[in-house]
Image 1 (tube, rainbow, N blue to C red):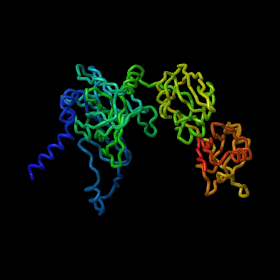
Image 2 (image 1 turned 60 degrees about the horizontal axis):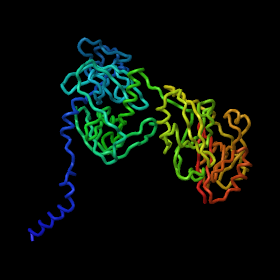
Image 3 (image 1 turned 180 degrees about the vertical axis):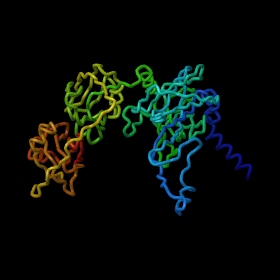
Image 4 (image 1 turned 135 degrees about the horizontal axis):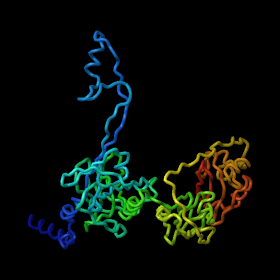
Amino acid sequence: MRALALAFILAVSAASGGAFAQGRELPDFTDLAEKQGPAVVNISTTQARSRNAPQIPQLDEDDPFYDFFRRFAPRPGPGQPSPGPGPRQFEQQSLGSGFVISADGYILTNAHVVDGADEITVKLTDKRELKAKVIGADKRTDVALIKIEATGLPTVHMGDPSKLRVGEWVVAIGSPFGFENSVTAGIVSAKGRSLPSENFVPFIQTDVAINPGNSGGPLFNLKGEVVGINSQIYSRTGGFMGLSFAIPIDVAMDIQQQLRTSGRVSRGRIGVVIQEVSKDLAESFGLPKPAGALVNQVEKGGPADKAGVLAGDIIMKFDGKPVNQSSDLPRIVGGTKPGTKSTVQVFRKGDTKDLAVTVAELPDDRIAARGDRSKPAPKAEAVANRLGLVMSDLPEDRRKQLNVAGGAVVDEVKPNARADIRPGDIVLSLTAKGQTTEVKSAEQFNKALAAIDKATTLTLQVRRGDANVFVTVKGE
């Protein structure tokens, strides 16, 4: 019986595991780690900080508290003055990783690794420790270029992130928790990931174990080529949970080239506020499928405004490059050299239009002005429309202030309201079946709404605070 069971197990193994015996066994990372490890460095930074020292009272030796303060108050180190009231200096240290991209000492890492550092030390695998200086850092992509004074350093080879395939093996080398030249491996989980507040990087998502200290280290493919810079993790504990994100190396190399030549990064802008096109939005605008970037707002006098782009347009292409989702547009425009004359293709009222736009430069720091968020008083006797909204006309002075031609303000939202609308919102337009109606008054809006079949999905363009948003209302 035991012999039969063993034969059955071997037969099943041959049938199900034969693929592994034919060359699909797990990869061996030993050569990669041995050859590429010397080009990966440990980066430690020191930041000087100040804080108020505890105040030590001047007490007489006979005071009962004198002995307490003498024993437990902080004592100065050798050659240091006695502590007193006021700020005291202390050092804050942090660790990260990086990798050598040229034999004369240029190193790539994350901007957040060296941000605010007063002193940067690079430790090589041969145990040398060298001081580094920051050539430039770009917080928008989290890429920094630093330099050490050395020659003949081992360097990495660059790969092509566009050739990465989901499911492909990748390897990270870095200094998690300060453990130098640690190697971890995993697979590519997804490509082109967009993260909150990260508009310029199509992240590579992996399940490679990345922990604090890995930041700035390289992500390799099995050819030993760098395909990304490990930058972020998603974690509830601060440690590895199977979600890590790397900056594609082609994005990082473009940034470092600009940092090396000019010390700063120049990006394009066209002056629009956009949002994702959902299935419901696509249906109400008459778009065959969800795609593109829906324009919420157009900056007055900006490049898009001068080109004729309107709020409610859906940008489908920029410079011939498809905008499959809204997050594609900032990356494409941002990577366009300011001053370039480009073509933007928009979907408007069922048709596509090509508009010529001259790309402007994105300022380093943009501070949004705060608008007047005051809300009109609700009108108790007003009747709600079929969406559960009590509307009133937007006063003339508010129209001038907000620079809008019309609009109806939402005074009250009934408990049974069917739209994600808030009191104080200003409805600017109504779109259904690809046809857009500009809102001139509350009465006109309610009449237009009543004329639309209740089963129709519609979209409202709404001014909310400082921004314009599109809100979809599904048909009943």
